[in-house]
Length: 290
Image 1: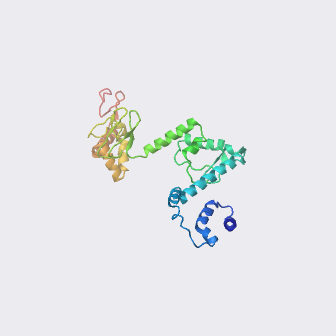
Image 2: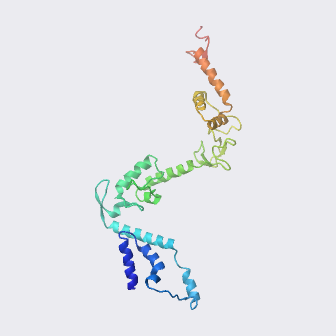
Image 3: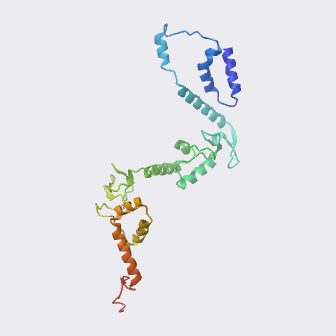
């Protein structure tokens, strides 16, 4: 025991201010016999086969040992922190450690009221994706929902959870929202940008709609385009990439007809004038008697 103790102390002195429990564990398993100058081995399975076999089943792996040591260390840190007085780097107030927020990855610590205000600003602005450690600018560890729930109130956490769920739904290619009841609709066998099949059927309100224009399903007919939007669509088509033009053509039918309508409207606007009574473009209005 004295030899083992001396070697463990040497390891500790060589790794000052570093965690040594796992290093001790691995060193004892790999070098204990060497430290004790033991070269012969004793096979206990010959005399106690059932006992040895049974005990081997309960041995922990290196990963399990490392996890156990890490969890124990975190628990002890929280106990020590709860009995300490910390100066918050944000508000500069002295608070008890039990009223502080600490990141599990970095040594950054701040009081919970400051962290709560920080999280509430992000959640109210809808920035709920990838909220990183607020106590250390260099720490890129994302906060877990459990950490956020421990700081903000229940109503704010419900908003965070709802917005995060909505972002997750929006990022899925096979999910689209029903234009009538706003519930998510699963598009089976295709994604929401599929140009060959545009039928969406809501399981909640049974509304069948077009996944392109979000209006009632119209079969193979092109999506209806209001005249007020013709000019915007025409400009969008002119500035679109070849792939985007295919999408527009699939959505609004033959784009050349749309372009003809635009050209006709431009000619009418340049060569005719509106009737002050009926607001229709005419060459000669019977009301004006021109």
